[in-house]
Image (tube, rainbow, N blue to C red):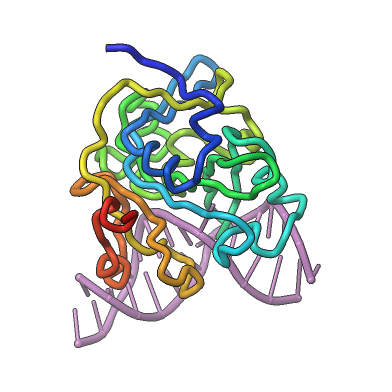
Length: 210
DNA sequence: AGAATGATCCTCT
DNA sequence: GAGGATCATTCTC
């Protein structure tokens, strides 16, 4: 089985397409010889200034300017006093869009991640965007890193992601409208727990695309 | 199962 | 000076 690192061209496509293709890929952070990472199970798309939930909806600022840059870079954001969130910039330079990494199934450096998170259960390591960033030691220090480089990157090992579902996004109130831009792998134990009104909006991704 | 609450800090007005 | 793409814990039904 051949393992390849995703190249710039992968990210330089419509964000929903990139988000769907990211599921099942291996997200990896390599630091001080410590390798941690896992298989992506849940992501959310934030697309353009017209998306009221997107950080770019109020125009370009020093904080979000990286979303306007080239695709395939890491955008890290800090929120709620406690948590970092990792995003992947998509689409061509000049168009602000990103994919929020919400959850993954631990694969590499599991013991290191358990220690960082202070938990034992696999499902507790990265079943949410804040947890994931903590497990992989992603902070604003990693903001702006090139995902085609050798510190933070994404691998394709050819495995199939399984059935992909989509729903409304979490934690953005009614701003998201009818956009079902939260994508996740169906019946995967590492997907974060969604409130009832989110679950009700869930559909197969294929159906939503058509 | 669902709602409420604090932790606590970076970014823009 | 306000608010936020969250989490774990602590409640109530």
